[in-house]
Image (cartoon, rainbow over all chains, first blue to last red; front, side):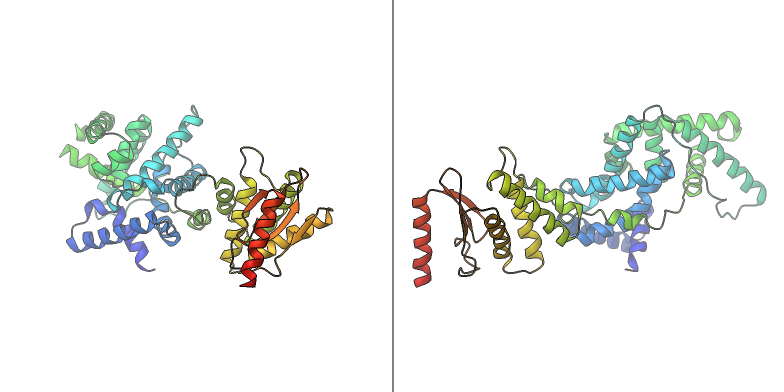
Length: 208
Length: 180
């Protein structure tokens, strides 16, 4: 039981895992989880919730849904996941499978309530930093501007930024979650980065 | 360098937008995990819906028995064309009761139905006290339908409408088995 948060952490940061031991452990756990899910194991379904509910909730929040709506959409994503358990092909596809379901749930909600304003992301307190006070304030100002710029992005571009840079999915996983080819995903990512760079650069010459 | 700077800022934004999840959310989601995670088989829709509702087993059984009685009363034990609720209900009752380890569940269910039919003035006969509970082909009960045929319920709760001749054959087969 104590290993669950550890596994959740590993999955969340899987893109940056450096040691082979950690990677192997993660792969083994994911293999086991996916196999048990495909077999319809109830405990595996509960484990999936423990590992992913926080990530899916944050994904919804970062896509611009309110707290309450994000909770509802997170629940809906898992309900959809139970119904589409047969579509989970392999352990490697676990991330992209669940995120694809969540992305579709969000898309359907946005389409249903077209015209309703998406919420802004809520930024927490200052991140810990060893930089001096001046740099810290400057960094935060830039993060604040970036936050506004991300919120202004069209939904499709915002999605690629959130999936890859904030939910830490690899390009392959994020592309599958967004249901586009890797090429299309990279192209969207480049467009989104360009927009963000331009918006921040217009206020801050440093990124020019 | 520009790219790195932007990525660093995006990482900063990811950290800044992390927020705690409501503590009860995971449990709320887990409460909705259906009993059966595999794709439902066609023809078991009623069963699937009721199982997925995750209502108390006894409540579900009570609801289904009432449905069975209603069906039996209104339709002489036959489903409406295109509807499988009666057959599905029987399967659900079997599922619920077998999960509770009630070995003679089918017999108990048939007896409830027999008592109901008798109360309604139907010509019903019940053999649950003498048949082998393990014998799925044993006739548990029978009653006469308005068209002169007979409706019979087997040990595994299968139902069939038979003519008087077929009924006699089935009963004599049962007697022969018993004699052995």
